[in-house]
Image 1: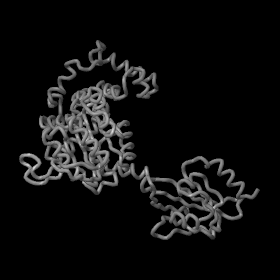
Image 2: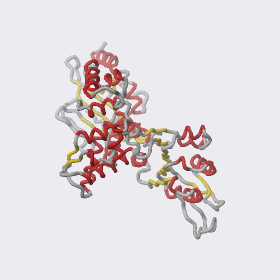
Image 3: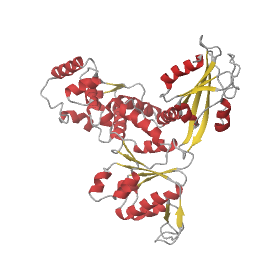
Image 4: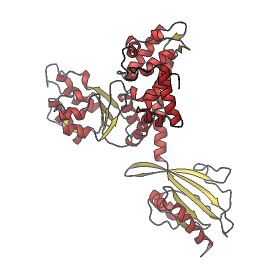
Length: 448
C-alpha cells in the first residue's frame, strides 16, 4: 500500500463521520480522499479533482498545483495567514435558501509523503452567521438577557426566522412578544418589506373585518372610498396579529382562508385580492384552552401554530432583573433622569422577590417610579411602588411564610450548596425548588 493510501485510510477512520467536509488534494489537483460530508456540502457524488468542483459548483478552490508554500488566492477572495492557511467563503443556494460554506486550505507536509498534499476543510457556517446576526438584532431591540431559557429562544428564532412558517407567540402581557415578532421579521428574507402590526383587541368588533381585509366604497355607512386593510399593507412582508384571541368566532373562517390561500375578498367586494404575507400571531391567553372551551376555532389554532413559541414571564427569568434594571436606568438617564443612583440591598431584594404580573412593562414603570422618588442619589424601599413594597409583608411567598429564622434559612441553603459542591442547579434540586427561586433567595439572604 502506498504512503498516500496508508494516510487516507487513517484519515478516513478519523473523519469519515464528522459534519465537516474533508478533502485531500495532490500536487496535480487530483482529489485523493474526501469524506461523505464533503460530498453532501458540495452537493456532489464523487469528487475526482478540483476542476470538477469548479465546473459543477462554481466554487473556485485554490490551484495549489505545484505544492509550493506561500501561494495565495486572488486578493478579492482570500486571506492568507502566517501559517499559510487560506480561508475563504462561498454562498450557495438550494431549496432551503442561501448557505455560506467556509473553506480552510492548508499544506499537509508529512515526512512519509514524497509529495505534499493540500488539506481542504469545508463547513456550513450559515447557522452561526444567522445566530450572530440575530444576536446583533436582539441587542438593537434591547433584548437584555443572561437567562439560559431566553438564550435557547434566541437560538430557536435564528432557525425559524428564515422560513415562511407561521409563528404563534404565547405568553403573559408585557413579556415582549411584539419585540420577538419584529426580530423574526428582520431576520427573514422579508426584512426589506413592510412589518405591519394590528392589535386585535384595540379594534371594535364591527370594524375588525374592514381593518384586516379593507373595504370598497359604499360597502357600509361611512365607507366613502375604497380603503385597503392590513393584509394589503403587509403584502410581501409580515403581518403581526397581536391579541389574536380577540378575533370573533364569525370572522375566524375568513382569516383561516386568507392564511391558507393568501387571498380574500375586501368587505363589499366580489373580487379576489391576492397577497403574499407571513403571519406572526401573539396571545396572552391559552389558545389551546380556548379551543377546548369552544371560544377559538381548532383549525385556525393549528394553522397559526405551525411554530409555537412560549415567551417566559419575568418571574421565570429573575436572573435578568438586575440587568434589566441597569438597562432601564440607562434609558431613563438618557431622558433626563438623575445619573449614578444607588439601589439599597433591601430594595433590590424586594424587586427580586416580587412576581411581576405585568412583567417587563411593570418593571419599567416601577424603575421610573423609584427614580422619581430617589433621595440623595439612593433608591430605598420607600421609593418602590406600594404593591412591590407590600408583597413580602403580605406573606405572598410560601418560603417567607416559614417559621424559620433568617439564619436558619441561610444555613439550609448553605448546607445544600455544600452538599452539591457549589453547584446551584444541584442545590436547588436538593431544596426542592427551581434554580431561579434559589437565585432570588441567595440575593435576599445576602449569599449571592
